[in-house]
Length: 374
Image 1 (cartoon, rainbow, N blue to C red):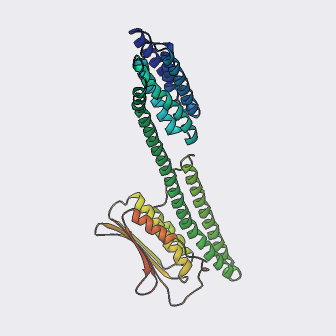
Image 2 (cartoon, one colour; image 1 turned 45 degrees about the horizontal axis):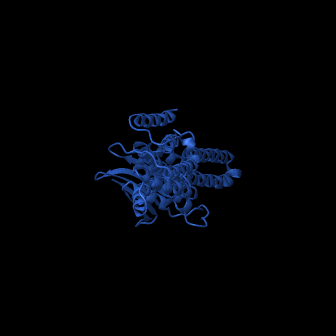
Image 3 (tube, rainbow, N blue to C red; image 1 turned 45 degrees about the vertical axis):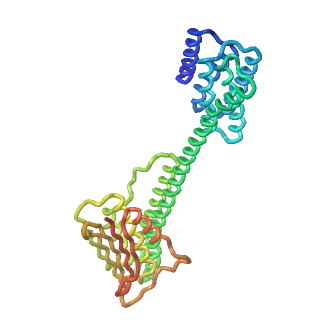
């Protein structure tokens, strides 16, 4: 309704202007009022599918009426021609911006011819010969500018859509990495507990039952992680947002307890940051510890000692996870067919936060993962 009111207001202003001066031919006023109303209506989103057709219709009607007026020219167009020109240029801009290329090309072609011929309405008597060609070419500069503006806005729209698509893709990849880190940690614990249950089933049924309960808890936790990831993926598609926060430093004690119960009792943890840690850093620290402990389960002998430290060093938050194998090597998890991407993903995440990430063998044996956050 507001758009219709705007179009009527433009038409009313044009009519008032015409009352105050000699009335041009209906062949001049009619197409101008039609173009003004069309210019106002096409801003309505539901009218965009018909934008090319409207622009083409305005162009064809305008060109036809101008040619008919040239056959018996009367009073020059004046304000009505200027309104008509502005309306056509606006339609050209919007058509180039919002309409598919093939449809836009035909519609803009018809509008460009109509807009060029409008130059002949402002001169009385109309020019002829080379003068008419020069005037129409000069008047067509506006069409070129409107086309360029529409193409620029179209490019901006495309960039914005691509930026949103790329952001969603990045978020999906990040969620996939989170799912890998959290679920792989729980599943590796389930494998360890299943191996222990097989050994204890005959000798100590009570301990075997405890191992099976631990498998149940880890399985439920892995399912919860997958549910959270699915909710976040749905959020990316515009569905309801998930208010469940990702674990941070407060989740480390429970994580370490479960890790120790799964076959690494010699696990020590110290968390000594002197001040509050930003949420992004705390979440990344949790993911680093999860990935490091998962790799300990995969590659270090069962029963290895593990030390986790989160501390302040010269104004930076430092997290280290180091393991050291005992003299007696016990069975490990089966080796994966291909190397994981968890550490590489963590290095990218730490780098995005302005930190440094390193991992490698320790001088005395074992493996050390370290991250420094400024």
